[in-house]
Length: 105
Image (cartoon, rainbow, N blue to C red; front, side, top):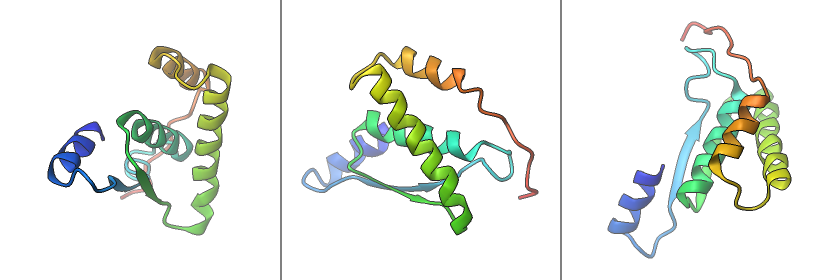
């Protein structure tokens, strides 16, 4: 995301940087949707992205998005506004997210 942010600012310095994303890797590879949300929101924050548009697909998947966002919010409240990245990664690992099963995509 940082590369996208840097390239976008070179081409249009006055514009906000907006990235559209979703649950990449959560279908064919069985990734955890809450974890994917958390990681993409964290990456966008670290990269200085102005707006992240996250597509969940089915309405039922909004729960996984909200869960990931909530976990990140709680983690940052617990660790403070600018915690060392190693502490953030440790806390994420401590959540023991599970790897799922491919949905056949």
